[in-house]
Image 1 (cartoon, helix red, strand yellow):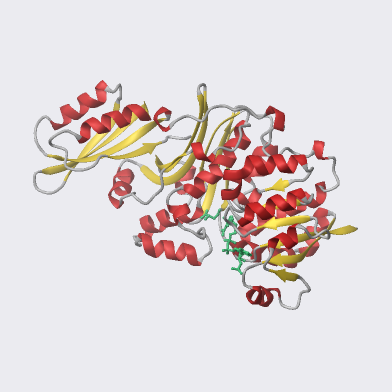
Image 2: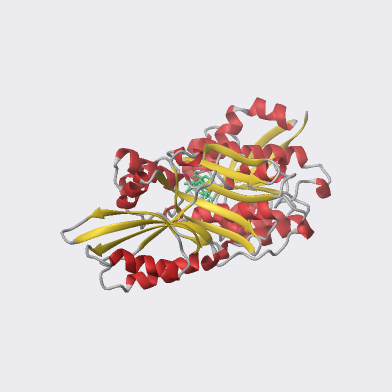
Length: 436
Ligand code: NDP
Ligand code: HSE
């Protein structure tokens, strides 16, 4: 067997610890696949004592200085699992400059600095592999980058944040309060170091940004994503959605249109009988629509120690197999050849097209519905259905499902409705997608 490939691990937390365990436990099986052993020789952490305890009597070198690992001439691959954008970027860029391959689970790093990192990797003839950065253990990068290459991908819709899906599922099925479920997601190792990244939809947008680049051959453009998280979602809307035959999920949606690409993350009503609506807990699922193959769906554990480590180790096996391959003939980082990446515009929020759910509390008196309907009609928006719920004495909640409309038109209509004298609440707006 060829000499082992030497790995420097930056981070030994949830994912780093899992990666170390997988490489220990499945060493034989992995070597049979890779054609050589994958050997961790050095680890960088903050707390050396804690790391030593986990590593037991193994001869792995432990340091607090990731640069030392990035510059170690004995190391072939640097696996970045510390998270964040500052040190991670510095250490990854140095490893690349030193001619080392990089494996990372850090979607924030790639969504913000991916163009720079992939360019540097190409210039230095090294690979940057990031299967673990999107949808945990699901091999979605491999599927899009290699399995679907015959297709012009039309759209992707996915549940790509385990923490928020876990929160929404537990709140709905067990009636648990938001903060209790979030604490449990943190205990289980699903949440980001800063859980607002999960709750506010930022983590899902990082991942969606990468999926869009892989699907459409565009540069990584996180700053153009439209992002809305689950923090403002109200139990009342979850119940109304159920009554209408929908479930609310935090979806990442990216769609190719004639005038550009939609890139958006938001709570979304989806029909209860569609497969994505039944993805519960920390599970993830990604629905990809290709013009040749039609819809394909990828499902699995989207967060946590072992599922994520599974993806990290899969990347390590790829790197071990392709280390000696001609760089020109490796699969391009973003699926398309670098000179074929196109600057297709990302559409502004106002240009998104979707169906909508609106809820507003009004004074219960004649003329209310006709005034609201007139505003919607003036904005060119067609009502699909509506119902009214009694509220406090003299008040009612009105819930509308609107047909496909431009987001900008819906915003104008909402602004006008909010000024009507009989409207007693803010207008809640959620997007509705029928999917397939
Ligand atoms: P953890 O917080 O569990 O682990 C982070 C590790 O990095 C720890 O070992 C920590 O050291 C080390 N570290 C942090 N800062 C430094 C530093 N300045 N110098 C040296 N070492 C440092 O994070 P996760 O394992 O959960 O996440 C790691 C990455 O994987 C993140 O990018 C995350 O987004 C991504 N990811 C996480 C998933 C999950 O389910 N948890 C799933 C998919 C991706 P110490 O132990 O000493 O504190
Ligand atoms: N915090 C992320 C999630 C980890 O909950 O999905 C996996 O990327």
